[in-house]
Length: 296
Image (cartoon, rainbow, N blue to C red; front, side, top):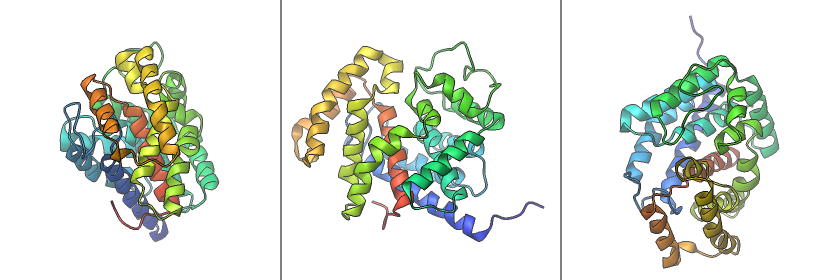
């Protein structure tokens, strides 16, 4: 008979579930140019679709005792069955190892310790995790993947999930996180979110600031896949002055030009989706370290 998870572990899993829901809610509460939000739909999708996907994914991705691969496959499948489109594959790929690390690391509230637990989880990923993740990717069928010579997602993997991510890390920033213990998440996105939490801010402006840190520093993998590197570099240049203003404490939602940039990106079909996924991972990390008082 399968044993039930110990209460302490189940409690940590529930904390993870709530943190995941909070991060996904914050994602669409915040205007992040080019991304879908309650302020602005886009790319044929609405914020309510993302909320619905998060609601059904939260249980599977935080299931106590589940492997990373099991979390990824079950969460993506639940989301697909609920909304019939890919809204959160990148989010799930990033958040599943974080939630496993939080659960197995006894709910650590220190960033360095959580990152150490995350590295241990990443090192433990095996072929079964890779097979489950590949099935999830095939189901979600994200746009612009193309074909590659080694460990293509349209074929069964023959290496562990971290090794498979290593082969994709030069072209995909989510895969890069698996190789570098989420360096972008902990070093770019997390600081503004933790600073806001310590100041009693619910996090919407900090989520925006985190997005701009990613958008102004990294060629967005989703844009690169669909439109090429030159277009991705142009978005970096557009994001840089907004990042400077966010760092200076400006309230960007009060500036009509910020909303116009959002709509302009969508009109050009440019979706910095990887930057948004990294934001959710950073928000989840912040919520695991300092539990939010309530959902936004």
